[in-house]
Length: 223
Image 1 (cartoon, rainbow, N blue to C red):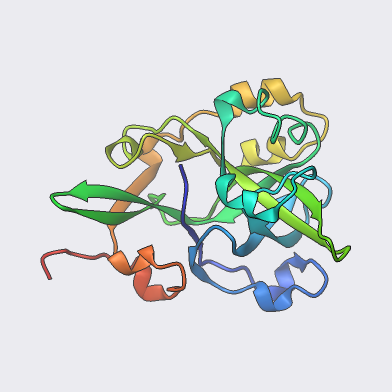
Image 2: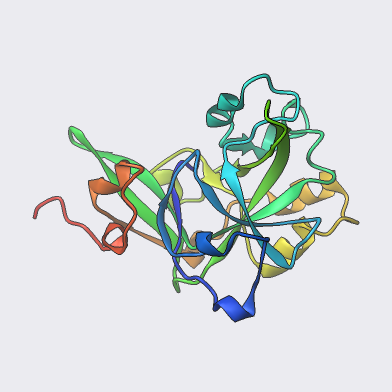
């Protein structure tokens, strides 16, 4: 699963296009948690960074709180689940990130670890998005992050990992002409562990309201 992640390497404001009225949301994020708004790109408008809420609320849901149960979607069963299968053809998205967190049991405590590209570069996570109409008539836009089996590195921490896409694969994921089943077969593989690294970070990342650069500093439980 993927329950927390970061997007700290923000592009220059004049080098990106933002969704209308969303300028204030474009800032470094060190602890993105479910229920928060975060940046992504959609198939409809792949050149514009938009901010949707993490935790997918299907269009037919009775309560938006269902989103907290749908922060991730297993890629292996994506086309079987009513909450996700109708989104695959036309509502794929790329979630912008540069690391994610997983917790490892060490003795009596769980220590969070930051997992990232070995060179520290940003990456895309495959996702799906949905729109849900509130009782007020306003629309809520939400997303879920796809997960797959872990590679050898992540397997030491968790039994799932996000579907991380390199640039060429990311372009395919949001290309409307692509066959969904073929995409899922080709792209839903764990990233090569040789391209990744990880290190322990402060337990403070466990509190969703904490969001600062100190969260990504290497941490030793002995100090």
